[in-house]
Amino acid sequence: MRKRSGRWFAALRGYTKPTNPRDSAMQTLTLDEKPPVRVRPRRADAVRRAPETGEHERWFRAQVAQGLAEADDPAAAWVTHEEAQASWSRKRAELAKRVEGAV
Image 1 (cartoon, rainbow, N blue to C red):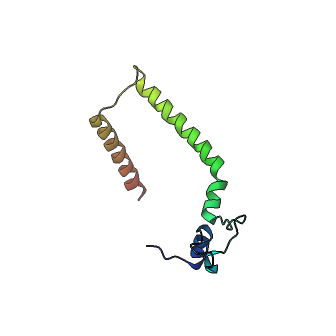
Image 2 (cartoon, rainbow, N blue to C red; image 1 turned 90 degrees about the horizontal axis):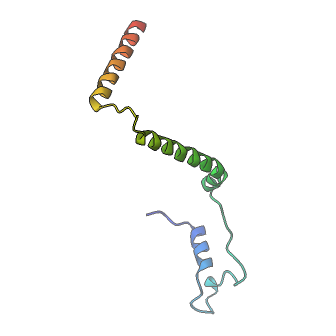
Image 3 (cartoon, helix red, strand yellow; image 1 turned 45 degrees about the horizontal axis):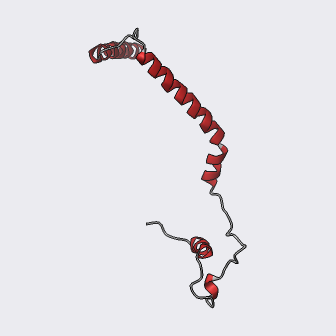
């Protein structure tokens, strides 16, 4: 559980209604006042990057739509698991030869 700071309790006290009108500790704000709003630095960065996030979201959705359209195409060439394993085995062997030759 996170440790609560004094500021957290002060903010909480600002949102609570006094249970006893004579309790001065609970009467920190009048009805027309609002507690101060603080923005955390990381949240401020996220808000500043929001337009970039929207741009990435549009790009990502376009890529997914393109992939689904290609998968639905009857002329799509499908590769079996065994074919993919064999292809990667050949690529790894070629890379290993290049690394051995460079040493």
